[in-house]
Image (tube, rainbow, N blue to C red; front, side, top):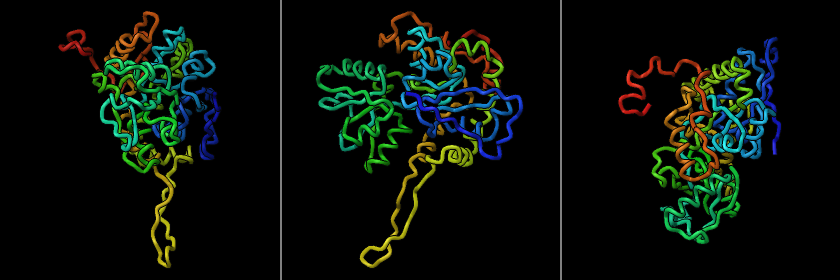
Length: 354
C-alpha cells in the first residue's frame, strides 16, 4: 500500500525557480529521523537550486519500494543493499546511486524481561521479522545453533516490530539499534536489549542493512544530470545534518511536525501539594541523535560492503540466479568531495582491500 504524502515547501519557499523538474522520491517507510538530510535539502531549497522540484512520498509497506521504483512509477527512492540484489534477481533492474545510512546495527531486539542473552534463548518464543530475508536469516541462525525448526515461531510484522512487541504479538523481532531498540525502551519503560545479526553470523558489519538511494536503470541512465544535482543537494544537507545537528533537526520537525518532542514538565496537585510531572515523549529526537553516527558523510557506495552483502546472499541461497553484486551500484554521480583523488598504485591496494 502506498500513501502519497507530498511534502510542500514553506511559505518562504513558495517562489520556485522557474526551471524546476517535478521529480518523485519514495521513502522506505514513513518520514522519520534517518531521513533528515533529505528533508533538510528540501526545506533549504537545495533541490530547487539544482532544478529539482522533489515530491517526497511515504510507503506503509517497505517491500513495495523496489517494484514501484523499478517499474518507473516513481523516479527515485530508498532501499537496503540486500533488497536491491533481490530485485535484480527478480528481473527488477535498480541502480544504487549512493548511500544514506552506513551499516546501522541490526538484530533481534527485546525487552530485558525476556531474559534473552544468546540466540538459543529464542526457543519457545515468537520472533518477528520484516520480510522474506529476515525469516531466512533467523532460520539460518537457528540452524547454525542446532535449534529445531518447530522450537520457535516466526511472525512477519514488517517494520513495526516495536508495536508488535508492545501489543504482545511477538517476544522479539528484527530492528535497528538506533531506532526500534530505542523506541522499545522509551515506550515500554524498561531496558531493551539486542542480539546483532552481524555478530551472530561473524560478518563484521551490518552492511546488508545500509540504506541506499536507488533509481531504475532506465531512469538513472536517462537522467544523469538530474541525479547528479540530487546528490549534490543531498550532500550539502548531509554536511549540515552532521555538523549542525540541532539546526538540521529543527528543519526536520518543521517539515514533519509529528516528530517534534512533546516532552514537558508540568505541575500537578497531589494530596494538596504541587508535584512536577513529566509528560509527552522526545523519542524521535533521541532516535535522530542515535542515528547521527550512521549517516554517510560521502554518500559513496562502499565496494567492500557490496562484496560482503553479495557473498552473504549467496551463502543464504536467497538469489536464484547468478547476480554480480558490483553491477547494481555506481559512484559515477556522487559528488567528488569524499572520493579518492588518485587510484592505488597497486590495483586493489597493498592489502587487496580496496
